[in-house]
Amino acid sequence: MTEQTEQRPGVALAGTADHANARVTLTSALRTGASHAYLFHGPAGVGKREAARSFAAELLAEGAPDPDNVRHRVAVGTHPDLTWVHPTGAHVMRTGDVDQPVVAASTRTPFEASKRVFVLERVDTMNDEVANRMLKTLEEPPAFVHLILISDSLGQVIDTVVSRCQLVRFDPLPAARLAEVLEREGVVPERAGASAALALGNGERARLLASDTGAELLADVDLIIEAALRPGSRAEPWRALLERAVARQGAAESEVGDARDERLRSEPKGRGRGALEKQFDDAAKRAGRRARTEVLDLGLTLAALGFRDLVCLAEGVPEAALDGERARRLAGDTALPDARRLRRAAERCEDVRTSLQLNVSEDLALEALGFRLAALVGAPA
Image (tube, rainbow, N blue to C red; front, side):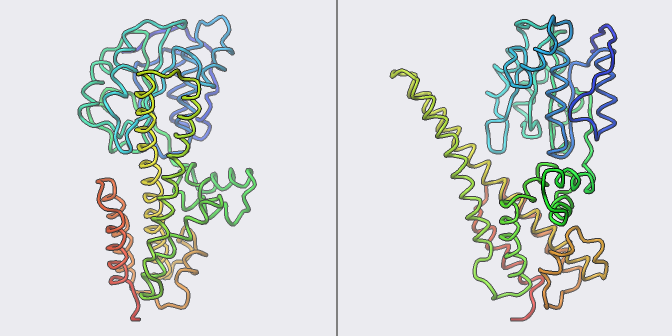
């Protein structure tokens, strides 16, 4: 279903400068009429969310007496006809995230604009139950409704959701482009280049890796690789990564706790106060779990990439390494095993990264990984 609108001049949409496919698709839609549902997909940190907000602003500004005011309120998140949904679960979108905020709200007419726009992040975390709640809204929404779904992992979005949306592709950013951005932000060239390469086109990850926090995380990860190459050199080399994840979990919970305390200071005593406290406590647990998982997920990804770069050294093509300096530092004076074993080590890191999404015991999984890596690639003690 496409809503035909009066053609208007082209608009420069934020977040699309490096994405020709997305830019052409969305600017054309603003000229000739927007579809009812879009699925923005591509790596994190490449502009999808920025583009979604800019596209939503243009949809809501159409026909408004003061379009710039509409764009400003969308930018700061105060426009009443824009609903932005974040999954509340650590690994899953819940039915409560969409029932009232999207499914029910989409049946009600706009407050002031001629449209209502709903943006749903991380739709790859929808399970079948949530997807089924959304299907009718995706198939036959009211004419004034536009939905923008966002995913960093298109392959994990349920097929029935994908088939009801117009796909808008955001490509990984080239490492050179990411490095250029980081250097403009004050990162030294060597660090910018290595961070951009290890980010694999992910802008958010590139910024993190270029930060002091990212450097510390990488150092924790490298302990695991070094201990695998030289068994017995360090006890529990995975412990630093797990402790970093636990610390990030605590910080995320504290952030929600601070927001709770501020809200409760203005909340009158009564039955509703207890329910509000429980909501915040549940939100803190979810935020903490999500933050902890993100650290471990990235750490194991970086471990796999470290072994991948060691493969490049073992095969005599150091120029193919993402971070050649890191690979040489990891190898040190140790004679590297054959590339096949190093590839298997990278695969083991990926296997454990995937298994952690299934709520397995993290410390046991990491401990087992350490033993397996040492058995695969370790030199004799």
